[in-house]
Amino acid sequence: MVLRFVVQEHTTPEGVHWDLMLEQDGVLATFRLEHEPAYCLTHEVRAEKIFDHPTRFLAYEGPVQKGTGKVRIADSGVYRPCDPREDSLTLELNGSVLKGRFALIRLNDPEWRFRPTGIWP
Image (cartoon, rainbow, N blue to C red):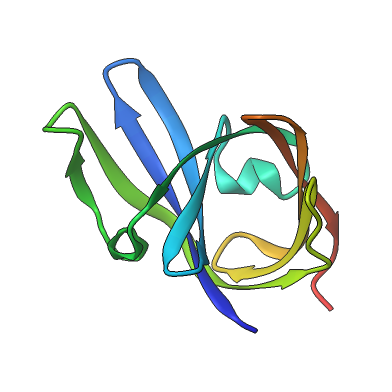
């Protein structure tokens, strides 16, 4: 099954982070990343599981949180989940930046790791 994903650059008064949003069961499972998509191509990064977002965020850019922040799309595309487990999920991502196989690995709630695992087949 092919699903959609987006990475939004989220600027707040406290700084910048990136939200990886994965389409799942009618919502976007969302992970806050400390680094931009290009960095994630070659590095493992911390990922914090945050609340699910509505699917409208697949295409949304603009103000959020009652005007205290803003988002812009840093990457988007489709993905295929591979070998889902309770504590990990392998993804084949095909975006404009993130291309290839990546893993989300749960350390403890809400802390995860996001890392590249291989090259797009």
